[in-house]
Structure formats: structure tokens, C-alpha cells
Length: 261
Image (cartoon, rainbow, N blue to C red; front, side, top):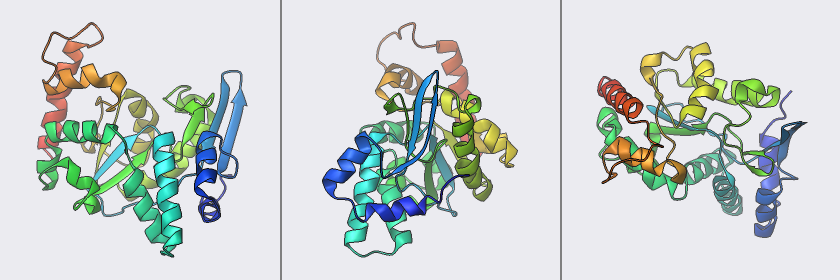
């Protein structure tokens, strides 16, 4: 049974800024779940990513929040407590502030603009999803809460389907969101996200026509692939880029997004 996450939210109010830094590096007071196997230790830590925007038109799905996002969300929640904001407002502010924060947000905006998503949902740029059009977006992950493997940000290994703890978290939290938002467009950021959430989306009634898969996560490791995808590479790609598959995926994704209009 999964512990009520809001129990952990209330612990944030008592944390100092230095406590938060320690929790981000080595979760203790905010440690939600753990699993130790021959592969290594998996840990799930709490950060305030609970808010679900039930009115969203687009759902952007990563694999899990990392330490950068965890720290941003915890600090945003701590500020909300200091301002005596209502709990639900604290959760909403923390979620929008921290989701896909850091350098990856600029790359993600460029990708979403390239495939035509802003036009499909009636905005000028995907950047507005973190600003004046934030009511149209829900930011989430296959694993809602920050997950770590061998002390590092979880990156899809071990597979969600192969680990009972990870599958429990994906089915519980992402499954809940899939049911609430089955009329939205789901943008899956990377093949490891596809692997983790496509079964959950289909089990909860989200049609393939509403799912953008075979896409990219906007991480530095994918920069060459992303630039080839968007036509901004400016040179011949290396053998790390599967040109035939990327060309086919680009065509399919842009056509699917155009059909949303």
C-alpha cells in the first residue's frame, strides 16, 4: 500500500533551506519507498508534484523528476508555506514552477513548437504553457515522484514493467492521471517513457490518436538527434542518428498533431 503523499507535503513546512538540500541529495524525511535488489537500490522521494490540472488540453510526460526539479519544487512549496498559502495553491505553484525546469525547458519548447503543437491548441508558442497558457497544460512523469537508482536520477533502467515497486507507482499515480485526462493529448518524451506509460494509457482508455510517441526527451544526450529531427543540425549526422527512423517518426508526429486542430 502506498502512503498518503500529502503526509510528506506537510513535512516540508518544517524544513530549512539547508534541510532541503540534504533531502535532495539523500532523501530521509521525504523518502516514500525503496527497493533493494541485485540490480541495485531504487528510492522514491516525495516532492510536491501532486497537482493535476483536470482541464488540460496537453499532457507532457517525462520519465521522473530529477534532483533539479525536486529541489525547485521543494523550495517553491517552502515559499508557499512561508506565505501562508492554501495547500492546493502551494501544490499548483510548485508543480508549474518546477516541471521540466532547467536547461531542458528551452529545448522542449523548441521541439513542441517545431511539431506544431502550439497552433493545434491555440497558442503562439509552447513557452506559454509555463506562463499565460499554463491552464492548458499538465506536466507529469511516468513516475510522479523523484526516483533514484544507485543514487542517481532514474533513467528508465530497470524497466518499470520489470520492477514491482516502479510498476505500482506508475499504475497508481500515472494511471489516475490517464483516467482524468483521457481527452487530452499526451506527449511522451522518449522511448523509455513510451515503454513505461503506453500500457498504462491504453489500459485507462486513452486512444493512440491522442498519444505522441516515438518522440525525444530534450536532454543534452539527445541534442544531435533532436537537431536532426528539427532540421537545425547544420552538418551530416553521426551514426548515433537513425535517419530513416527519425524521418518516418517526424512525418508521423507532425501529421498526428495537425489532425488535432
